[in-house]
Image (tube, rainbow, N blue to C red; front, side, top):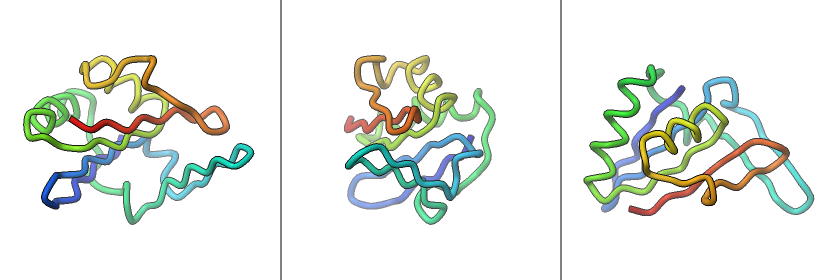
Length: 98
């Protein structure tokens, strides 16, 4: 999974399944674009990613999460619930404002 943190007045934490990088998904009027410029960062294993999620959740960050593995990890870490997950062409995603 990929992790990239955009630093701003509020950090934007981008997490996605690595195999989705650079792809675009469309469903009717909805488009999910997994741009490398936004999502490509450091490849991380589950343990490091959960720790980073926990740390960033304490920092009042915003999260953009795309992909089945990434979304399931965010659910496991407790920052989203299954009800907060949407999808485009079967690709799950979630947006979280802490």
